[in-house]
Every structure is written in structure tokens, then in C-alpha cells.
Image 1 (tube, one colour):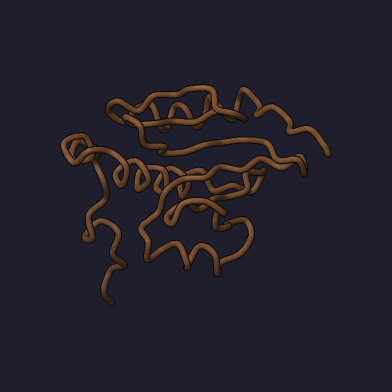
Image 2 (tube, one colour):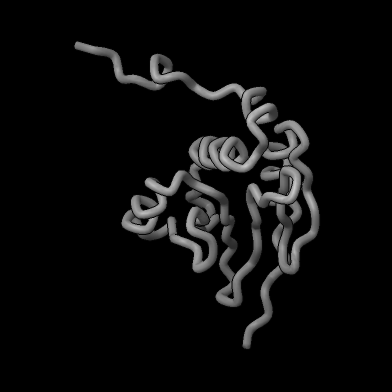
Length: 131
């Protein structure tokens, strides 16, 4: 069995900059890779796979899990947790989209009093202009 590669420091730093800006979101070493938690809840976990690819798993609304699974690579449904999905990280990763996904993950897992402190785009900000 191939060994899992360590996650590059630059990748951990970039993810940490996104996640540790959330209230009480803490970074810690995981059984492999690095994870971010709020309380006892996992928000995100980045790790290297035996295939030498890097992945991040995070939480999504239950109704979105099937959509991620159907999108296919670079997205996938994790084999644990009903609301856990993931993304292969590589040179083509859209970091703005990933930041939105991680914001959603945090807001799903954080207590409401903390999630309410996180700015999120409103429908008016993300809606396409009417012609």
C-alpha cells in the first residue's frame, strides 16, 4: 500500500487563512492531514491520498450532496457521514468557489450564534441581472 503524502504547507496555510477567520474555528492535526473544527464538529479536513492526490472534505446541505456526487470529478461524496462531500485539490481548483463551500460547511456545523456572525452573500448579490 502506498503511503499518503503530507499536505503541502502552502495548501494548509491557504486553507487555514480561509477557515480560521470564522469564529472559534480551530486548526488541528488529524489522523492524516489537517482538519478544522468548531466545537466537536468537523468543518473541513484536507489530506493526501494513497493515490498521491490531495483532497478536502467538508459538509454540505443534505439536498446538495447528491448534486456534488453527480457532478463527478473533481467533486465526490465521502464514504462517511450523510452530509460529507469532497473536492480533489490541484492546479485547477477554484479557490473562490472553495471558499464559498467552506463558508457553507462552517455555517452548517457551527452553533447558530457563531454562524450568524459570518457574512454570506444574499440572493440579491448573487442573482443575475434581469434583461
